Image 1 (cartoon, rainbow, N blue to C red):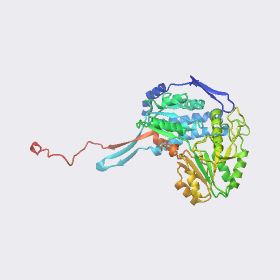
Image 2: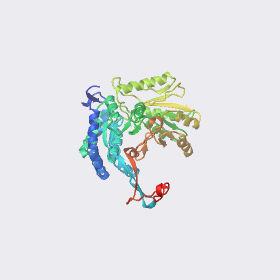
Image 3: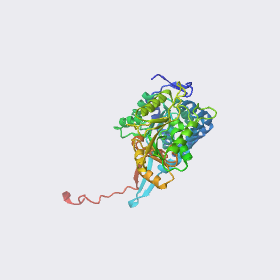
Image 4: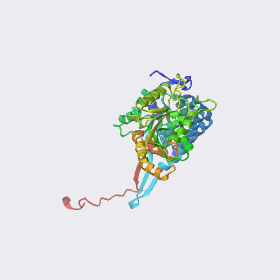
Length: 476
């Protein structure tokens, strides 16, 4: 790792930003020294400070969206929705803190009271991803700060400029620089941050492989809180859908939004064999109309490039691997510009593929699987170690009820895309998709821990059984 991190535009290769690699120990020490004062403020004070952050982001919305679009390659229209999500997260997190971590007082026996309050953990580390470099880490940072924690945030080495901009907005709003620290670096700095004795927990969004490594690292540290938001090999079942065009549109949105670089994107399309031809023909017609271009193009594209050439190369290798196992391409994963990471949306029938890998293909590739009946569709939906998102497209409420009851996932939708999870609800998965600490509205749950107190306004005590008579001679 060099001493400088350089960020470049996926669309053009031009430099976006550069900055020196930071020191994890120094950033954690700075956060540790600032934490107590921040935690001593009232939650109302902290909430109002975070509201000021939202106002700063609003005032810099266009600048922020342009930076995200340039650094990630996502279309400008989509980058604007990410900035809107950053702003929207503030009020959602305030509501969530009040709903999930309120002070509760209960009456107990003999005039006592039981009180439940919440305390911050201390210093929390946040490791952010590149696909939503503002929205996803912000979804950890805002609840953590409201709860009274200090935060050390390391953005992805692929999107450091967006991370730096986000932190600057917090500081401009008045959040003390010691309370939110920015650590620039690559995998080495991420590992160093995760291993610091001075952090009290780690909030991670990223790949299942990295999440498993962190889980192993924290296995002997139960005193530290670990929240993992990982990937998915998400199923989308289309069954008895009379509105073919609407179903095909949802399928394309599910698979190819953000060039397939969302953890909730559909990876596997499961259909009834022999009843699927019309639907697949419509999906292909829409795919062929998708504009793939640079973020600021006019007309605006539906897809930009994937994050870099290494990611594009890996996806092409994965696609070729599916073909070698017997997959039949319906639309190939083409590379229109060899020197840049643009990819066209791909659809491949893997029904007869042998030893199909259970992995997250983090890009614009949708695998088609034909099955004989709805029970087989459910079995195929569950044919994965992941369990993040799933959706069923059907006119039948009864089929949806069966699907919901039997599919293992943390997000299960009906006649909606797989990638339609609202921030006003919990978000997370099971299996390799997370460690049962859902984020979004439930992020408040892991940003503070509950403290139970039994309270009385006077000291009163009696031992009713098991003591000798105090007046008996020699204790007899």
